[in-house]
Amino acid sequence: MKKLLVSLLLPVLSAGAWSQETIYRCGNEYTNDAGQAKAKGCKPVDGGHVTVIHGGSRPAAAAPASGSPARAPAPAPAAGSPAPAKVNSSAQRARDSDARTILQGELTRAQEKLAQLRQEYNDGNPTRTALELRNPQVYMERVDQLKASIARQESDVAGIRRELDRLPAAN
Image (tube, rainbow, N blue to C red):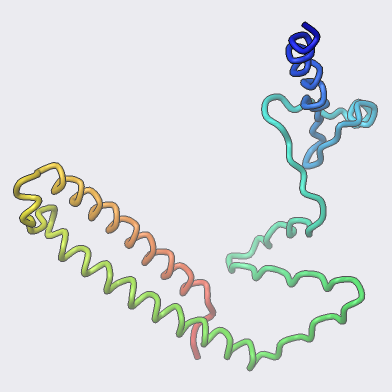
């Protein structure tokens, strides 16, 4: 009888250990201190659990209002380590040139793969294999897969072009 009682009460008693205190959101900060939350006018978070990861850097400040894209600021050096050396303009141009060369190669490969997929897709009528002649469902699945692959590849090509456009113009 005692074992039965313990086995029935154990989940109920351990539920308190699993529950989480009320979490309050104060702007971009979270706290479980009710006094601090009340003083700051924080609001309780409803729903799921909050996971907080300590450390890391704060988000960068807002981008300038000018029309040109801003480069991300360099991360702050770790405590005790020397500050990173400034990169001279010729080294930066060399890096940009290398990046452009790599992206051009990726763009060429992506465009070739896209052309190959479009040729296989054949405007929605790919050539049927022997298995597909006997099983039309397999053919429809392959057509759908080809269509999705083409969409992904077009997205990849567009993304690579955006990356190339972000790089400074080649001299």
